[in-house]
Length: 156
Image 1 (cartoon, rainbow, N blue to C red):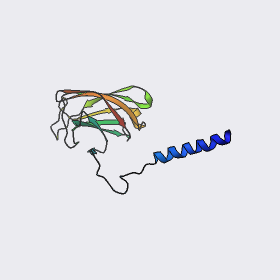
Image 2 (cartoon, helix red, strand yellow):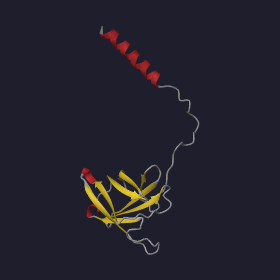
Image 3 (cartoon, rainbow, N blue to C red):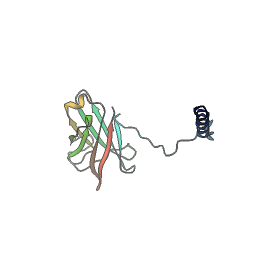
């Protein structure tokens, strides 16, 4: 009986594999990427999409100083978007531990940005010197629209 089951089982496996190995009608030629839309972070950081292609947040970690800088950008990550707040609250999760970060608004005399009307925010924390990869969430209000619990993953 065992000898009859093995050939039958082998035949079943071969038939299943043959059915799964369907011919790919798209092999041998290229298709343009559909719905592939990527932007480049102006400062070389990590871009986080906010809303449905409405805005971006760029996050950049400086390992030497332990500083995390964030910029609010438009949907194409080309222009800075000023917001009317003095702080940007993030909850980072290095090693799975909830770690609140309060990024302070940064004034920039060359662009006319002031605290409470700026696109740039910064925080310094010693753990940022050694922690390379971490995830988190943030909530931000931009031009009257509140975006809640936006997720990010910092890899640089």
